Length: 358
Image (cartoon, rainbow, N blue to C red; front, side):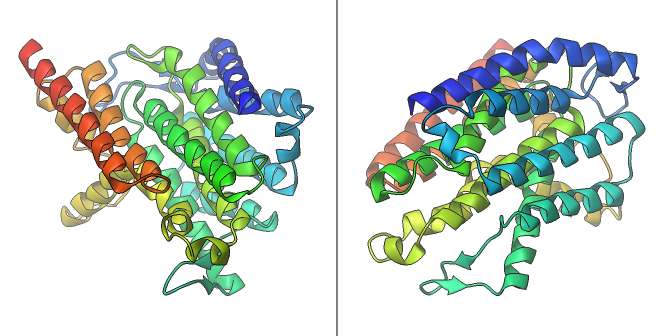
């Protein structure tokens, strides 16, 4: 655990230090988010935050590679995750600068998923009526779908200062806790791609947040949101590959199901926003990718909440779902229920206070 904490703090510190330099580069190359009618920010703001995250990730890999425990996490899967991450960041940087069309971005995201497949990162089984081993083609298709959905869920929620970075950090904490506790409880290797990936994921989010919190000095852009989505999806998929479902399912169903369900649980808020946006736009006869001002954060702000309050409320909503789901895999349900109740109470207090203040 100590080495993963070092990894997390190192990636956070590196991302924090690198981001101002990337901001300068983004301004120089014109990678700016101009103010549009649907935007919340009031001044043109540089993008390319994903580049700072990727550089921090690469440097962290180089430094922690020699640690006794974490060093064992480096292998074929980690190499594939880094290459896919580099690809989506370059794709996102191109979009941040030149505004690529939606189909081009979707094709690029699918190619990134293809890189993961080349390195053997794919869904191998599903826990339905026991354990069903998937044919290679079906497993590959499911893998690509998970990657696409997760990337776009994070992308859709990235519409307000600090929102995506904070939500993904909370999601990463929940997923790291699950992956590590699962290894401890069931004797799996604690040195694996899921734990390493999520430790770095949390770190880059924490390091980027001070620059991205309201008022944001830099946006993560598509380069950042696609990177975070890819890392979360990759951590989930690699975790399923480390688990012997037959060994666990006989004792407890939760740990077998959760590697597949946890990414959707921890990203429940972005996923809900994604689904609602697609349905709303199709109903209006528009493209599912057509932008609007009806996302969850827009609605909370219309109710009178500030940007900061809106972000905190959405952080709490995410934690209310993510942490109890993780706890339920290792503790009695009443512990998860109490945790959820406490978080719901805090969310209600924050929401009421914000309304009183406004």
